[in-house]
Length: 465
Ligand code: UGA
Image (cartoon, rainbow, N blue to C red):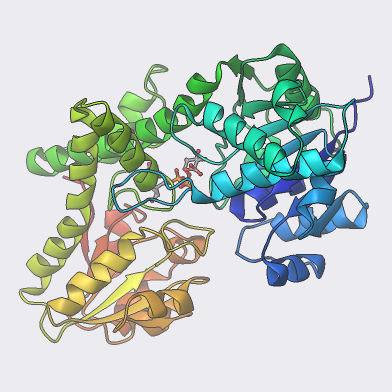
C-alpha cells in the first residue's frame, strides 16, 4: 500500500532539525525546514551544511533535487500548509544545570501565531516536539501554541481542537545520524489524543515498515517498533535513555579501574558480560569517558529536575563523578610515564568528542589540553575535522590536520578520540617520530598493547591489567 505523503514543517535547521527534515523528505514527505537565521537558510539552499555529519549533504541534495525539501525563514507559510510541525531547537544547559526553554517557547508561540494567521479550520495540525525538554513540557508547549494563536487575534484557537501536541524524542547519534534516522531501534511518540498518534504513525509508516527505496542490502531490520506513550513518559524516555547510556559507560570505567588494580583486562570483561542479553555488548568501551552535547547536558538536566522535587539521584551523581575523574586519570598516566609535564610535548590524537563529528562540546580533549598546559606541557592536537575549532576553544593548543605532524618530537601521545585515521596510524612511524620515552596513553583502548610495544612505544591503556 502506498504511504500517505504529509506536508511537514521543521522549525530549527540545526543538527536535529536538519537530519529530521532531510530524512522525512527521504522517505517521501514534502518538508520545509524553517530557520530564523537568514545566512543559514541561504547556505542550505546552496547545498552547504552548517556542520559536519557523514552522508547528510547527500541526503539533503537528494531531497532538494526531488523537490521534496526546501528551506525558508517564513514560519507562517510553512506552518500554514503543514500537517505536522516539528519543534527542533536547542535546549542548552542553563546556569542551574536545567534545560533552558527560551527557544522552544519562542517557536511554540510562533507556531500558534502562524496557525491562527493561516486561518485554516478544517485540517488540524500536529505540533511534534523533538527538542529535549523537561518532563511536563508537553502541556507547556500546548499552552504556548494557544497563547500564540490568541496573540494573533484568534481567540477561537483556544477552544477548537485545531492542533494537538506530541513528544517525539530523538535518539540519533552524532556521526551516524543519517543511518539512525532511517533505521532507528524504535520510534517513540507520546501524546494524549489518538488522532495525534495516528498522524505520527502515518508520518513514520515508511520507516516503521521499512518500505522506502534504499541502496542497501540487506536492510538492518524488517519493522521498527513504534512505541506509544503519554506525553510525560515520552519526555522521560529521552532523559532516561541518555542517563542510562552515561551510567553504563561510567560503570564499565569503574570496572576498568578495578581491572587495572587486579590484573584483569576490561576488554575481555566487557565481552564476557556483554554477551549476556540482559546487559548487551554496546556502550562498554572503557577509557576517557563520555562527553558531547547530549549525555552531559541531559544527565545534568535530570539531576536538576530531581533537585526541584527534593529527590536524591545517587546513581546519576556517581556516574558524573566517575566520569569527571577519567580526564584526571589520563593526565596522571602521562605524569607517571613522563615524571614531569613541565616542558614536555604531548600530542592529543583526536579532539572532537567522538569520531565522525566536528562537535567539541564537552570534549575530553579540551579539559585535558587545559590541564596539561597549566602544568607546563606543550600540547599539539590532531583532528581530521575539528582541529581549527579546537585551537580556538583551547588557547595555547597547537592544532594540526596531520597526525604525524602532531607526533613529531612529542614525548607522549594520548588517544582521545578513536577516529579511523587514529586507529589506522602506522605505530612504527609514530615511534620513529617521537622522543623518549615515546609514551602512548590509549584513552580509547584503540590499539593492541603488544602491537604498540612491538613498534617501540611505551603503552598505557585503561583497565588493561
Ligand atoms: C547520544 C545518544 O547515544 C543518542 O541516542 C542521543 O540521541 C544523543 O545523545 C542525543 O541526545 O542527541 P551522542 O552524544 O551523539 O549520542 O554520542 P554517543 O555515541 O552516545 O557517545 C557519547 C559519549 O560516550 C562519547 O563521548 C563517547 O566517546 C562515549 N562513549 C560511548 C564511551 O566512552 N564508551 C562507550 O562505550 C560508548
